[in-house]
Image (cartoon, rainbow, N blue to C red; front, side):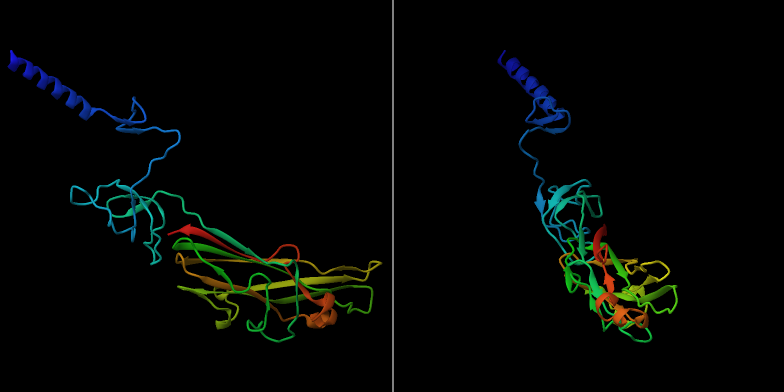
Length: 292
């Protein structure tokens, strides 16, 4: 009789163990709807934390049973690396069998804009190409430093805006006088892996040359005479560069106008004859992270 009782107890224990092994686990709920169901109104789930060194290196995360790391293993990475294409940044990663795949959105955007309102520029009165060593530096965009949050490909957009100054009434009759002023903006940038240097070449946008021009009008036919000397010329150049997280990249935007001095008030050197930088829209430099 005693042996029968022990046998029945063993059978019941086996059935219960089998049921528990095949059932779901619920934390904060008695009716789990999956293999693991967590419920809370004021607490979160904390992923295991580890400091990765590269998306290609599984370590320091290991499989507790030995062998390769199981596909789908997920952790929260706490490290930020700046070595190149396989860098990691803080966030959630999952292992796909060969590399860590980021599971979090990575965004990095920064816009630098001209400050102080419209800036006046002079005409250099030179022949040949504009001189990148003789410039008016755009206020607020001199020796600025951008430090990327992530290693990867960035879109760098440089926006410029130039308007010519007032021209002389250089006709002796009731006519319309029209003159143009030309030159270039220069965008220089340097840092790890990047060297945009306008002084190294001429009229090469890849090296920071951004052609600009504008015209002014004096209409003597009308009474009183009409003038228009704030006709803007907008020019935008876009660069795609691989930047490293945590590294400093220094950049400057400048301008050289070198034609048209004979037709502008005071030869374009002072007063109303000077040109306008950022008259109705400031010049700017924008950095946008695109990904690895």
